[in-house]
Image (cartoon, rainbow, N blue to C red):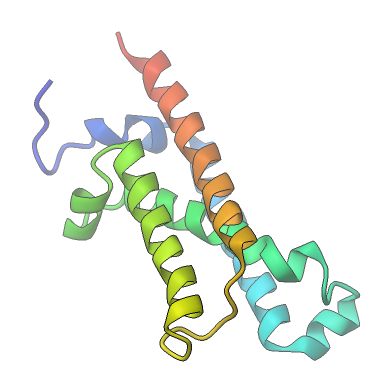
Length: 143
């Protein structure tokens, strides 16, 4: 089936389910709270979450899926280019995450942060979940 650039058929898996909207906003909240606790250590310490999985990896798990959902539901040219399919969306977002991690290791100062291979695992795990859910949804929605 050939789809035009403005067709929403390619977003069948995301546009039809209210759960993706709930996930999008839930992930945004997790990402913002985790980022705030990382940027303001006193906040993390006050909540007792400083130095835990939440402050170390929650943003890395939540942000890539949020970007995935945003791109796959988007109508802008960037979404059309990078998010033509569940696989292209997941791979392009994962590639940017891996690139940012390696910049932290090999080009310190270019991107602020500390290289952590578990960040790459966190990026991949969130994206893999989105990819698998959407692929299954698309598979079962075909006539």
